[in-house]
Length: 298
Image (cartoon, rainbow, N blue to C red):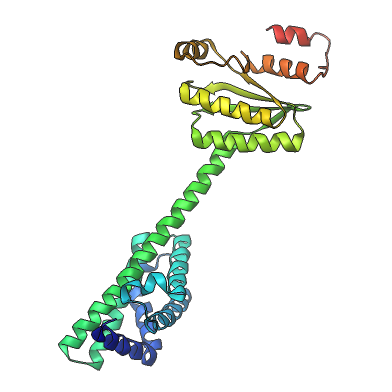
């Protein structure tokens, strides 16, 4: 740290100590005047944020960290800015508005410093340090907001995938996973985790993967299916793939994909009949209803 920066920081530390309440009050007033900066945040919350931020800034400036790294490397200040950003994200503020709110503290600090000195050089040196300090804080608040939104989107996306790939108990020891849409790597992982967990909890002996709703089957989809079948077998269960429609069968043949080691059936009914055979169970036969042999022969 240079002698100039050290002197400026001492000046800023003195200002923050002597004008703590005024700095907080002026920052709150400035944000309220610029209504876009306080969307979803009431005045009481603003005052609480101001007190925490001014205190954390004082603590950060008293450390030996360079001004440009104080916001990211000083634990208390980093935590304060991160929590402020997350709180405003939950309130519905935009990342730009949150960042601008942090940056607006520059104006408050410089205004108070101007009252304590008229020396242009000192004011310039103070402005440089304040810019380094609060620019880093503004970027941190923006990055935190974006990261939190990405985490929320990722979690919601995973929840939607789980809802779109339910594991259904069709029969005693028989589970089914009806797949609809595209089967990519991320979705395959969700299907695999859900299916293996269900096999363990239900003590399933057969898992049926129905791909009737899968639009196309290419090399990647076939590879995902084979990986799922392999994992199911490692759990001690058999696996049946149903929904092999004529177009899909032609595509698989044209691609030269070898599914000979996997038990396949044309329909879910055929697969269920086969699963009941594998588990040595009897299917109840109501008068007039098709029997097991008729169901399997369809």
